Figure 1 (cartoon, rainbow, N blue to C red):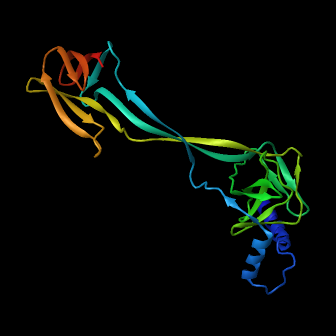
Figure 2: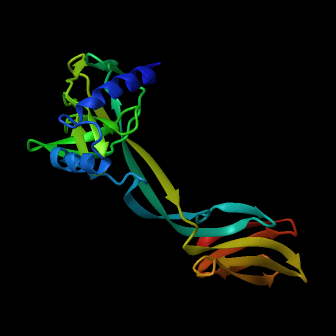
Figure 3: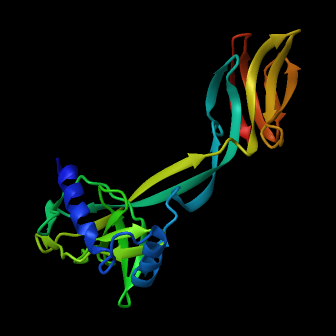
Length: 256
């Protein structure tokens, strides 16, 4: 219902855009009129969130001088480094329930509304940001503090044409305030290794070693040691085998 009322009102108001034009004037002349009488729009690139921070994360599954158990097929030693990217995208929402009032097109706002920014224009030396309305091509204008400009606009190509009717916010302190939506993505490990327990064969204790630094996605290697308690070392990490069966291994990291 709200959208239908807005549509009817905007259709009437749109006749004010091309003041002075007559019937049978072609689209080309209207476009020229728009350029001469409109305001140049600087569009925002909001096709994807903005990258705000990147950091390298290190994660490992072992601690020195603590006994641990790993079952066959699971990690004994695991150390990974991966990149984590943090993104942010700015949205707007009303600071309270309210409306923009005019003779023809009242528009209601609720704090739960989430609105995007389309771009900005400069009017009389002041910058206004453009917020799309429910009707395609028609926008509200807000200043740097989120206060509404007293007119709506129509986007015509790269120009903004202001409508003649004035709009009045109710209550007077109705604003659109910014809220940032955050997200993050994490890459596959780019450095590090993973040592998985692979049981006992031919009276030897077997491990599968994966090196994440390999550009083709990882390099596998099978490593074995005599099946007896003692201190062994893999990739510079020394650990003591406390007990090993074909199903699991008990161990303690002593050196990293």
